[in-house]
Amino acid sequence: MIIQPKVKGFICTTAHPKGCRENVKRQITYVKKQPAIKGAKNVLVIGCSTGYGLASRISLAFAAKAKTLGIMFEKAPTERRCATAGYYNTLAFEEMAKEDGLYAKTINGDAFSDEIKAQTIDIIKKDLGTVDMIVYSIAAPRRTKDGVTYSSCIKAIGDEFKNKNLDLVHNTITDASIPYANEEEVANTIKVMGGEDWKEWIEALDKAGVLAPDTTTVAYSYIGPEVTHAIYKNGTIGMAKNHLVATSKEITSDFQNVNAFVSVNKALVTQASSAIPVVPLYISLLYKVMKDKGIHEGCIEQMYRLFHDKMFGTAGAVTDDSGLIRVDDWELREDVQTAVMENWDKVTTKNLKDVADIDGYWDDFYKMFGFHFDNVNYDEDIPLV
Image (cartoon, rainbow, N blue to C red):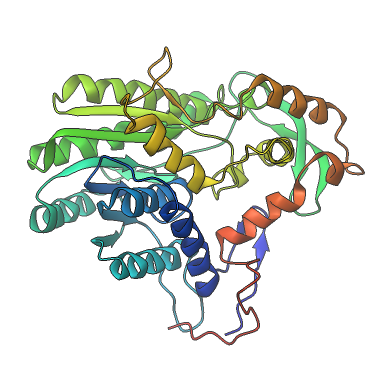
């Protein structure tokens, strides 16, 4: 099959295996050129196949030489359909890890389920003994718990939210109108995207005796600038992230051998962020400014800096006054935000390419699915299975 990108709204329904491999290879090449990370030898990455989770696994495997066990929820290829990008990413990661003599195994299943937790524990006992680092990087639309399925939503709280938006289909500036959530929708979003499952993982691992005497765990969040607060920080997602932060403190308090952190990361093009109204426009404006200033980072640069500088550096974990690790520090620099907001005020469809890095946005988007790599032959007939 000749695999070409098929984009519907904010998602690409196809993925290219050789392109995904190239994506993983380039991230590994970057990490191998960096100084070693001193810390984390046996790592569990819950949500390991794309974005920040994949970059976390690559950073810890190839810079810390850690053994990594990953959890993903991806679709394998069939005779008629290609696999998901995360499936191809993981195949490539495991292949390259093996070439370097690194332990890497992956479980494909619902990380929310008791079955996958039990399967994970069995593998840890057999292969690793214990884990000393747990990365929790789940971005899921729904979660089934005790026979009930909860669905998350992206909505404002209190009042309907209106602001500028980037129409990804036509590359035009439009107005976004985001309805406000009711109490049930807020509660369901917290159930899916909050910290409950993260803590259940720690409880299960602790009960099974597979946590090392000094274990670190980290989950990921985002705060962003005021222009995105209504839809993110103060919206349904933000309420879930507040729960995540509260859970980190509960985990540290309830488990003597575990230190739990939340890392606040930079705005980037990911499968999750592409779905949030207003955010793609902000990201394209941000990319332009940060690239002009020479401080732009992608997922791999962010995660390497997180582990090397902010978590396992000579000073240990570096947090702000709220106990959060901040790798959004360059994004929220005053000079960066001043320039971004100036362009936010004046951006129109006509001047979009002048004030925003719309090409960079789309390049990152397509590369998530294995497309737009100049050394990959996209006219090649690829066997699906």
